Length: 361
Image 1 (cartoon, rainbow, N blue to C red):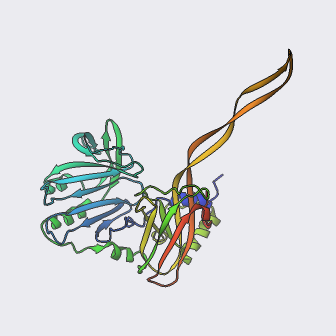
Image 2 (image 1 turned 120 degrees about the vertical axis):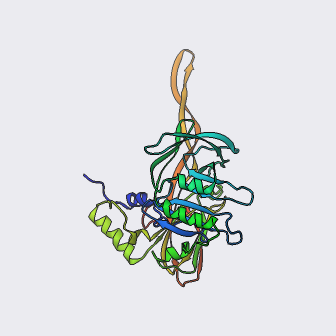
Image 3 (image 1 turned 60 degrees about the vertical axis):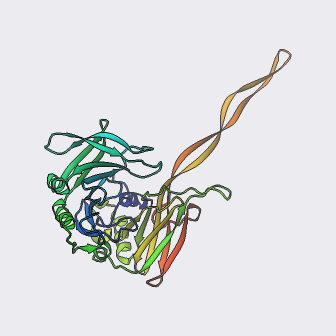
């Protein structure tokens, strides 16, 4: 018997969804979209003040929490190119260190390469590995247009496993950039406007859990994709009600619905976030992260027997309080209405003030 399509089940399925590969961290509006597909999007970064230098292409996976990669061209201080892999599977390191990695690609022999494991702060959602690759043209020509199950291994363990496509277009854009030619592609804002209306409004705030009046606030880690935004149009509401009524999990989210979901990473150590370029309308801000909770309970430690003379007159069990620190998942949301385009709405995403339209845990 199939499981009912509850709000919780649906939201877990959509938790990692990005809008067609276009939901990028704050401050990425200067990048230009090269191409996008169901696997993800390639973005190009140019430096207008320094033609031929500081060019980069970055592949952003279409779903959150999947590995990504970036290819960097020459800079003023480094004539070579580098490839940076980002993944949750890359281990924590308190300092940058030299390592050996093994690159495995479909139908090709494995290759061992020197790399640098970059320092990673505790709580950071991803680790980074950098591989120096020499001339940018040779680097790009040596890479295949698409990869299925590309793997990067460190100390025998797979730390990156990813698929990508569209490199043929990203390669051309990158080579034009290092040749001093400007790329005529669309900015992120322009590309997003093709999927949904773009406005001038902002929703910003803080997300945290505060378990008691005197308890400390606990924030999601900086850089983590802990905040989502749902654009609550009539189209989305009708689709959601249809999914619940049919009790059938959709195999794929149509782009007309995917455009209603946006994501943002936490900007600092105090849980701040921001969504920009929004039109007026109704929204729900969704927070999803873990926090620490202290659980105290009484545990049996022994029994006391009482005697008077040689006569046993009673027994009593002894209990002592023990405290445990555990990780709890928090998923909560808050409705927001932007009345007029250009407005800025500020809110506090506090679990003690939660609202349940879609899901509460």
